[in-house]
Image (cartoon, rainbow, N blue to C red; front, side):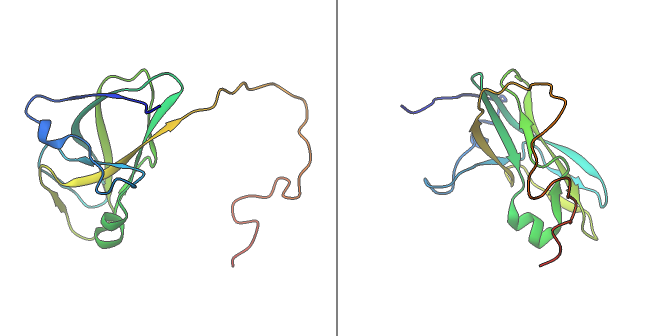
Length: 146
């Protein structure tokens, strides 16, 4: 059965409703609600006009667009951003300009992608020890450079 999720749009932003470029895509494109300039070396909150009502045990992840990253050095500061089921505010995208010049975003530009994910029911259990593994405590590049 298909899961249906309610989306409300900011008044006057109905044309920015999230959409997939292809039916087989994993993510819906999020678009900028307002035009603004991203200064170099700074994070800026970009409004989308999207409000979402997720059911319990679901989240929405806001992820960067690969073309903006490759061509313009634009990133999402908190990637992926998580939208919790209880949040009812406007979805905002925190964009960072790592390029050499300010970057202009126009209203309607595709700025990020949103993926809806089902979360497993999980309990955290306090323990005095953990089982061993081949990796152990190795992390942060401990597996070497390939």
